[in-house]
Image 1: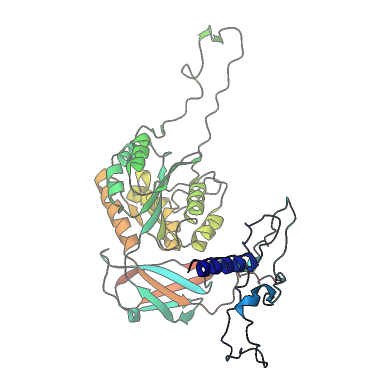
Image 2: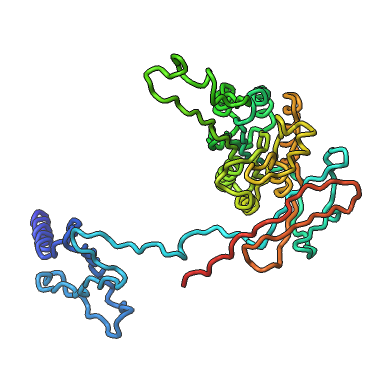
Length: 429
């Protein structure tokens, strides 16, 4: 029994020596491509079974006593597949060159330039807003041709407003306006965007566009410390116009100074143009308007009325105003329509408001100005909005717009016309 056990152990040791060593894969290398894993050794099949890939029958296995004469089974040669032609090797110390974005790959926003929107305010003869009108109650004409309405809504809009204060009016009138600042902020909603400007000899932006918050309140508090003009006669001679004198001669023997009164300016056009350019950058889904508290006088602006109006109409901006000071007096209001060359305009607010579809409220007292704030914002927010597709060619020429309501005894406030957007440039090849 011991002899048989010893013979079995010797035979098992000889089989372990004749078995080929197992192939262990190498670790990944940075300089040599990874090699495929070794193929598994073919399993021994029974003598009566034929392989599926060969047409010949395999010979029977030799007896175990001749195990040292058995040759290892032939295995197919493993070769590394060629690299893909789409893969390119980058040299050492170089970067992968990514193609730059072309014009076609850049996301662009498109707008139909032939679509025209016309905000409309309808009031009764007593100045009360008229609600409940339908699309069939309106007719829109462009250059005399009737247009087909493709859009109509009476929903309110959020507002982006540029508020402009004339600090060149008389000090008494400016004090009345400064008392109305709380009512002005109360006329806007929490979702509106408001900016503040002042003008006299020059234009200044006091606060940028933001919601009605503490920043706007602080900006208006600073304006309360601003003084208006002294409308007295300028002192250019007499004892109050010069320094100390002895026997009619100035002290020190210097010649008497010549006092020149300062030149008065009211750059209303420049202020509206500055605000209109800033408004053009605001969201187009908001209703844009310029709200002016001024006497309406224009004198000394670099920008002309025509150029300023073109910017307003091109960006769909309406002008609302509160005419105060001397412009609120009935007699002066009629005389202000007379224009004397080289002496400026006494009140341009009605002209701007009528051309852009806005309104002007002529108020003198502080309480009346408070009411005008609320009425102006109510009318601007709750307008009817009409839209149509124009058939006119894409040019930058001015086009007249006329809105008619088929109900008698109603007053319609709408812009007189518009400047279309310039034609789009052809796409680059």
